[in-house]
Image (tube, rainbow, N blue to C red; front, side, top):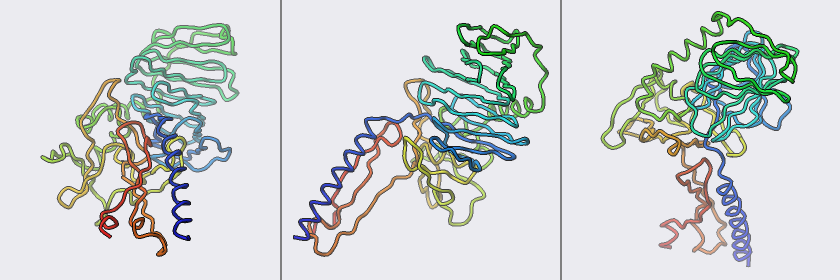
Length: 364
């Protein structure tokens, strides 16, 4: 009787698990995510749905509802795949919407440097401020400033084109003229001289130049967020069995992937790995790790480009298996079953629960 009751309870729980997993699968969470790729000074973070602020951590995945704040001497860089967003000191940014088609940020105060390297057909990149919405129409370089009182926005298009929208008004902007808008109607505006590059601009340009010259770009898809940090922390080689393989340098003896970091819950993907290493984002969420003749190496897979062949982001590229031990009173035919999370090729966390019988149970 106890065994039968246990089996019925287990079947009920397994059914709930299958429903939950199938719901996640049908939801198809976005395969695009942001990354806090660099920070210096004091940078604060508030996750979606929370009112408290905590100290930001490198490699934190960023998604809809997240907020960042840089203090007086702080700076931060958000990497979005195809775009770099850099925060100057005393700057607040919220992620209003981020999915495979839309990147919508809100600049509440301070200064952003935005560099968009590519926009796929149908993709939208927008920065909202307290008094307007600015849509970036082309790849380019943009500087956006919001006064501390939130009443005025200055937009400098160094390269590219965009449109500023207010209450009943819209203006096309390009690199020929910088604008300063006051109020939400955009009827109060003035032309301003495009300023020379300041120290924040030079810092942003230097990081762009380093990314443009990344050696790792030859081995990975441009949609892989964080691949630029692999250059200074490892080496590439071609393996006859795996293809292109990246191996980290200066790691401790006996090092293995997913050892230094922590798990955190991030909607809509669930438990997500945040690696401590500055190079740990791309290798934790894309491709896979393989032990190649006694050495751990990261295999990014074939380079794929184009809007129909994105590189999908995963909460972790490590496979997970959950094993359960059943009471001795349970029928021997049930012992040895495992609840295994099966990953499909597709968006992150598109998974299902399957009950599989181990070979040992089958022979008992």
